[in-house]
Image (cartoon, rainbow, N blue to C red):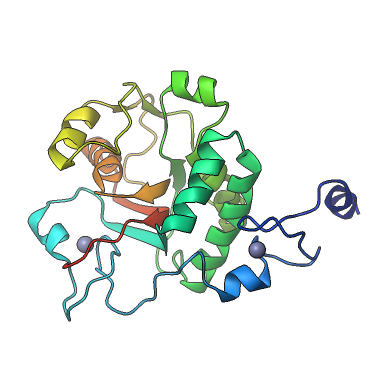
Length: 242
Ligand SMILES: [Zn+2]
Ligand SMILES: [Zn+2]
């Protein structure tokens, strides 16, 4: 009843075109946008078994993962970072539209369910990749926390936001190359109270670009004894020739 009332006052809208959606509709995209595949899924064929990037040839692991010794055990990325996704994420992060994030998290939940991501392993914690407290205060929210909240609720995995912190206010990464990203992230994350020893952890973030953010989080957690560290990101950039 309350949700019906809320839907009447704040109708659920398509995150791409803004069309008002049917009350019963579970996902946050209208049928015509869905049909046009504006938010492109990454199909399961030829995906790297570690980072989940699409690979063009018949191999299990991409060149990038072969040449990097990543600390995370597995990354699942759900959608391609195409122009539409880029626009949605920037509206979500920089125009104070936290409601877009809630709708995106619904989309993520649907894909997680379809891909049975939590089927083969029991996870102890979901950790949204933290941003520095100063940035969170300025923005008003941490985008990853908004994405992680619903995933935690739906899958009954504890949402942990107090003991894994970003202690360095790092520069924005988009103009940095891989080596600069590594340098930028060195010492960026820390654990307050070690509740992560021997635990299986899922990290949540919005974009997987070079993997350096996820990798640094995983490195920090593995160093203090975490057992298995995987990540789920809303989107992933596409690299040719992998
Ligand atoms: Zn639409
Ligand atoms: Zn890979």
